Length: 302
Image (cartoon, rainbow, N blue to C red; front, side, top):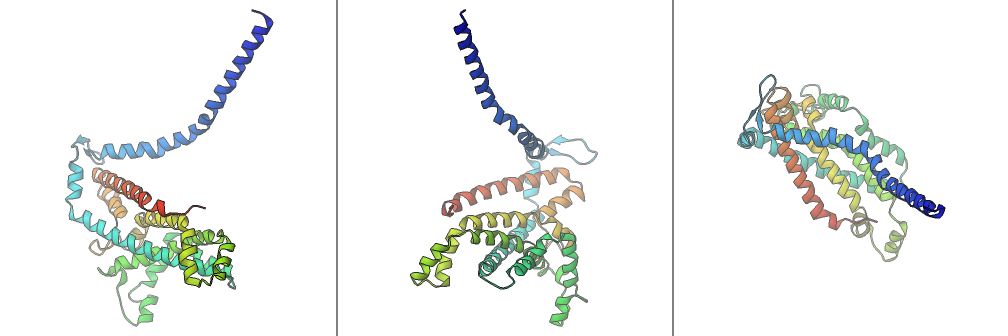
C-alpha cells in the first residue's frame, strides 16, 4: 500500500469516526433525561397498572384477579359522588379563576399607578404555603369567631355544611391560584404589538372591540396553557381538602385525589387505590388529547 493510499484510508477512517461521534453524542446527552423519566415516570405508571390487576394490601400476598378491581370501583356509589364533586369543583374554580385573572391582567396592563403593588398583592396568595393559607381561611369561615359571619351577622357553618363546604373550598382554590394565572396573562399581554392597537384606534374601535378582535385572539396560546394548568391544579387539590374539610360532611367536599389518598393510606386498600389511579390517568390522558384536538386549531401562535 502506497503512502497516498494509507493517507486516504486514514482520512476516511477519521471522517467515519467524527460522523459516528456526531450522531451518537446527542443521544448520550439524553441518557440522564431518559433515565429519570423511566425510573420516576414510566416505571411507576406501568407498576400502577400492574398492581391494579391484583388483590393486595400491606402484609398480604398479591392475588391476580384481572379487572375485578375496576368493576368494584365503578360500582361504588362513593366513587361517582367524588367524581361529581370534582367536576363541579373543577368547572367552577377554573372558570372563575381564569376569567378573573384575565380581567385583572387586562386592567393591570394599562398605565395604572402602583401597578407593581397590585401585581404583588395578587400574586402573594400563590407563594403563601397552603397550610398557612388554609389556617387563615379556616378562621375566616369559623362559625362563631370568623370574619365572614361577623360581617353577615349570622352563624353560618361554612365548612360543615353539606351545601357550602365544596363552594368554600372553591373560593380558597381561586384565591390561591388566581395570582399565578394573572401573571401568566399579564406576560402574554405585554408581548402584544402596540401597532395593532394604534391601527384599531384609527379605525374607531372601542375597548370591547379591541379586546374581542385583537387581545383575546392574540393571547389564545396563553389562555390555552392557563386553562390546562388550572384544570390540573383543580384535580390535584388533595392538600386543600385534607387541611380544611377532610372530605366532609358526608363526602360532600371529597375530591378524587383525596379519595385515592384515604383508600391508600387510611384504609390501606392499595389495590383499590392503584385502580383509581389507573382510571384517573386514562381519563386525564383522553381529556388532554381531546382538549388539544378541539382547541389547538383555534390557538394563535405568533
